[in-house]
Image (cartoon, rainbow, N blue to C red; front, side):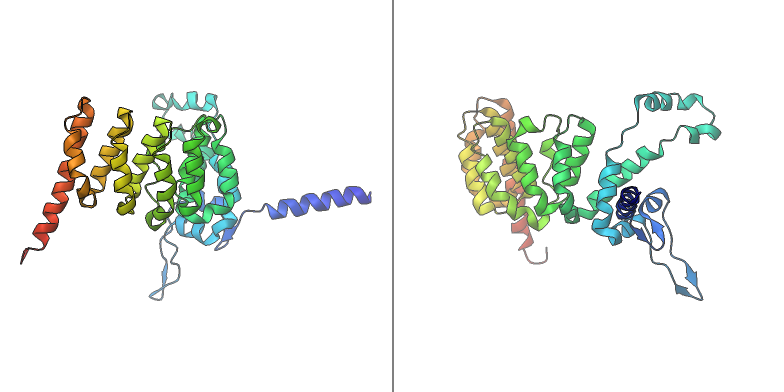
Length: 294
């Protein structure tokens, strides 16, 4: 009997620890379910300044992570997906019967995790585990969250890049690393190392990511110029395009890019022409900015 009571007590305590965080008297799921709440004025004084559910999620912070990560993983079952395909033939008054509230919550959870940014750091091990799943939808949702985690997400993104066999369902890596802001400095040294990776795919994505980070040109531009000697045309093309992204900071690469305009590969020739235009246009703008009255 005592043992049974102990088990019940432990279960109760565990459930209590799993309770959703609350803000202004409402649970996290309630905030996600409701629309925008506008300020309320009383006697000419604003008594509520909660304009969006995003502010509520920020206030709950890391307490919301376990729930958001769990809800993010939901996928509509095949039968429900097929059911929604008949929506145009269903009277509008009955559309609510086809609505998948859990799918809506999953989408909102993903958005909220991205809003939390670096505050998702405690959930990073779980997000990495999800990225290694064979479920492509969940794996790529986790990637989207990691990509907005700032400095904390850089090691995970680099691991996806260099250890692709462990992340079989991750796609669209080239679009990552664009939201690092000042944390981009932490990504530059390891990405420079990746430029010389024997796998052309790693080198290409590293070059693309450097173009999205756009920091430390004194280090990046010379490294990209070295890549112009790479035997693989795809690596050379990525390096040319990224030099263009550095615009005026890559002016030292002009002679090298002029040579690339004579490459046998037409794609590289066009990329070199485009990069030169971007670099020269940036310097032309800077020169005009120094003209009196411009």
